[in-house]
Length: 368
Image (cartoon, rainbow, N blue to C red; front, side, top):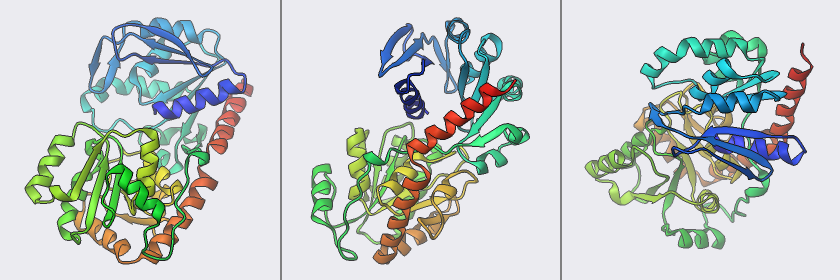
């Protein structure tokens, strides 16, 4: 969500719009700074409850920053932002981007539901990252008449797939990347990038490894709350030596991981994986993808037997079978990779996303 907001804010600021971003800080102090033409206000945070930041100063800043705003753009779920705008917001129009349902925080949801229902009702327009997610969301589906699907995007200029040689051969460039990243040159590398959270389903990938040839190695880039539990699982299954944990990587290194590996894996097990931006980045990098059907945008971005394969969630055997299919078929991997890159650049490019958001702003501004 943070990167998506940054891209939108900086792009519209570059076009000459007056853009302010209001968030909660990670510390108990308020800071204000200009970042690439965007005024960024970070309201002091006092506590953190069930992934929700609590800031006593937030209502003041909402009232202060929205009283002259033509458009207030909320990004949900962000309970403090939605609640404060409902109670103290003064913007002329409100647009809301629905990033994801609240899935796991059941206690928070009991108190938050009445507020969220009012926020959705009063929003002038709702932006969805995909139509499929809106139709399947119990929160958004009653409001589809004022929804527009605007998929998340990538900047094509950041991605440069490798020029692959003949089937099954590693190019000198790929081998060079593997050496720099500390990856084995002669293995079949499965890649996952992102926060190590429960809904990423990497426990299913770990459970699939014993069913795969010994030269299949998982590269799990990222940090998160499930790291220790998943390392322990790998140890108990005897596959610790077949998993590489690079930790958190820079943006530049992440792009190189995409280019240095053979297949991208997103074995999500929950609707909390609402879009899957890493899937999109993998497609743009020219990687075939294996993802799961969780009723969200993931299996719309990665099309089954077009850009990769889609399996049932929480099914290590099915995941292993899909991996074996691509492991044994280098020509199929290349075909999926070629289609993947074309799909990413034509359907999910950043300029198209910005044009669609601007159209929403203009249409909402004209409404009485």
